[in-house]
Structures are given as structure tokens and as C-alpha cells.
Amino acid sequence: MKENELPVQGTQHWVVQEGLRLFIWEKYQGRPQGKPVLVLAHGSATAGRESFDLKVPGHPEYSLMDFLARRGFDVFAPDMRGFGSSTKPEGHITTEQAAADLNAVVDFICKLRGVPQVQLLAWSWGTQYSGQFVMAHPGKVQRYAAYAQMHARSPDLEARRERLATFQRAPYIRITEQGWKLRFNSLTPAEVNDPVVMDAFAKAAALVETKSPTGPQVDLLTRQPLIDASKITVPTMLIHGQYDDVADLDGLWPFFTALPNPDKQYTVIPDGGHMLHLQKGHARFQRAVADWFVAS
Image (cartoon, rainbow, N blue to C red; front, side):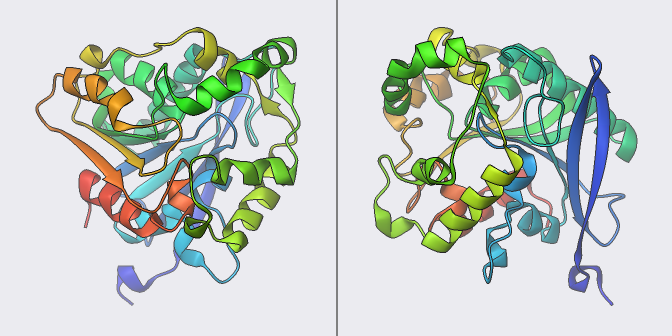
């Protein structure tokens, strides 16, 4: 049987960082050895597995990890501290701590697979701690894509500002299934959302994220900018959905123009918002990501 006819395999790993256990979910087709390594960095609400390997009944095409594995990548989705299956420390977590966690994860993966560099895709708040990681360790990243990257004037961040005191008071909050579904809406019209997908995501998120860190929200609302485009020297793509409520051309174009590497790309995908990888435009998004990192 040819490798591209084999089922996609999944396996889990653990990394100890500053006394905390970090969970990593890996997927590949056939054998993982010899494939380009791609790391997916989650956002401020849900961890790696339910973000990028969501199982939707009757719709296997929504798993970004499965798609990329079938395109020839060895794909890793870690959970930063406070998220998913990783240790949930007391107190607020910071963007810098998540960047340190990502560094530990990348070092582990490079040693595991015998590679000097990884490719990196970051989503939402993941663009902030991944951006810090790339700034500090450019030699560890071959190519980078920042998906749904916020900026200081992002409309959704402005809407969240009234909840800042709540975020500062409690390091974790509980989000209901209905609360998870709200992330699909905002500036996004209903016709780009599939209720079956929204329901699957809400159920998975509520099951895994029994409490969600608020530290990322505090950082996003009080410490922007957290990254400096002029110090991100690797080939970089900015990508977001047409209706994204934190990422838009006006807010991100100055950041894009300041990126120093001439190998860069700005891509807007129709039929999606902040949850683009789980919305109508997901197939276009998947192809754009795979083409940027180029495996097969």
C-alpha cells in the first residue's frame, strides 16, 4: 500500500518545562521520519488538539492536522501551560511564558525528529507568543505563518475591554458551550458557519477546557504591541479570513510592510472569520497554508 493510502496516525508526547507538564499531539501518515515538521500554535481560548484536530461527525475534512498530514507533513499541536491537557498553574499566565513553552516544545521536537528547524503556524494569540519566539530564536524556524493576528485597534479587543477587570481578578474563567459558539459570529455572517461544526467545537472545547486562562486577555488588552515586525526575520505569511474581527488589512498592513524578509505574503481568505479553519472557507485556508510551507 502506498503511503498516501495509509491512515493518518496520532500519538502524544509530554515535555517538562519549568516543572510543568506540556502536552503535544502529533499526526502523520505512514512514518513520521524524513517529513517536514510543522508546529501549530493555538490561541487564547482552546488548546492544540481541539483547535486543529477537531472531529466533526460526517465531516472529516475539518481537521487541519489530518489535511496537513496527508500533504506530507509531520504535524505537532502543543498545549501551552494553562491549556488543554497541560499543567494549569495558579495565577495569570503571560505571553512570555507561552513563548518559553513553545521554545521548549520546539527543542523537544527537533531532537525527536533529528531536524535543525521547524515550520510554524500560529493562530490568534498564538501569533503573539509565537512572534516572540521567532524574534528570539529565528534560527529554529524555517518558515512562519501568522493566522488571525490581532493588533492594538482590533474591533474584538475593543469589545473585550469592558471585561478587563474580570480578567485581571480571576486567572481562569469557565466558558459554557454556548459561549464557545459565540466565537463563530461577531463580524461573520451566519451563512459561512455550519451548526454541526459549531456544535462539535463547543462540545470539545467545554470538555477539554474546564477552565480557560485569562492571562492572555490581560496581555492583549494592556500590553500591545507584544511583537515587533522588524525583528521577525524569517519568511513570513500573514493570513486571515474576510470577516475576522481581530485581523484586518488596515490594522496589519503596517506590520506586514515592516517585515524585513523579502520572502513574505499577505493572504485574505473569503467565507470565514476568526474561526476560518472551521468555517466555509476552510478548504481555501488549508491549501494556502500547505502551499506556503510546501511539502507535497
